[in-house]
Length: 577
Image 1: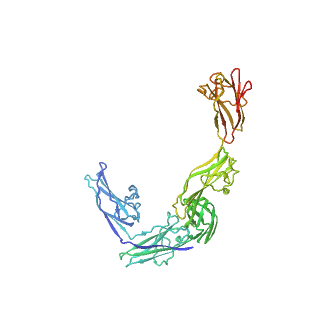
Image 2: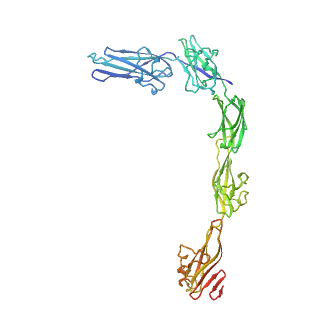
Image 3: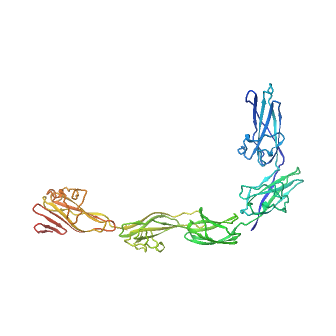
């Protein structure tokens, strides 16, 4: 429990009892044949400070057939925007104390009146208008000076005394009253020694007992005082300072260990040393608007230990706030996380892979930031069989990853993990690294085609009779052919036909056993002395087909020949090489 005090220095009110006199203008308007009325609304008068309003008086000339009624209102806004509407204000009489009027509030500084003038024709055939000559409103500036509210930070505050230094000439006096609030909104009444507004604190030494309403440790978190400086026509009193003593359990932090964390990659135990820590106190750590509640909190009056999950933070300064059950709190701003470490784990990507090549990336880093990279491969789409990241070696941009301890050539799935680090220190001004494109290289089978060299069958009358080959087709692969022919042109191919399959340019010879119908363009005995084939080897990326040999049979009506890899066998058995 701490002893505290609220102090204010040098209070001086230089004036008491001022009379205000207002000038005015008015006019009348005839409302009907029997009555004429007019309204006078004064200018808004500023008396510069909040005052206690007293009496309104005016001088007027009226007759039996004319009258004047008056209203008055006050406000703290120079345009009276917060004042009550005239229609809701009660009338006042000359010489009346207006402090009790429903539109007047003591302590406000702006005032305005409204006069309603009326003349009745039915009563007197000769019209006589009422005359309003002058209006005066008195007020007392010795009424009060009210302090701003003070937050003791604890809802169990116990006020113990109020004391001040004063100078009182003659019969002048200094009087004090206090009030309190739990929420700075709903306040008690102003009160003196007996807890009512009828009494005051008058002992500047603070020897008077405070009422229970201010010392029961309930609802007194906010305090306000009102000072009344009364000259009694003897001179102006001066209040030099004022002190309100109170007790409240407000936590205090003296040190925190460790004073910083290296980075935000793990949880850490934090020890907070200080005083007035209460059972049930809460601990909140705030980092870049992220509120983190620690776990395993252990509290004694002078020490708190807790586990802080730094992985929820991003680095830099961390505000630690301790709040006791009574609402009092303290904030420690000298704790920080030196490095912000963020991890980016890519999606799992697949590739038709024979072997992995390099991993490269683009990045922007500074002297206080860095990026490290890891990569791993696997044969499961969820990487369930891959090596754990913690065991993987770092790689550098452009490095051949096939020899990395977490990469195996032939594995289909690949994933990378980037760790970005920014050094904060105690500064909130930092530059994070930026990771741009990441590229993983790999080798794989492709779908490709091969065109043979032209072959001269030596006769323009030759026809193509068949095509067959030997192949090995893993799942997902294929081998297919098209053929084109040309006439002879001086020992060289003439104009080639289109590449064609059995039916035309849009299909292929696909039966390796030779069960392929030959396109009519190639077996009509015209323009087919020269021939050429085109083969497509279709891969799924992981597997490739194998073509062992190819045979194209051709000949005239009397002869036929077979094209082999190493020659041609004519129908009569002659081998041409």
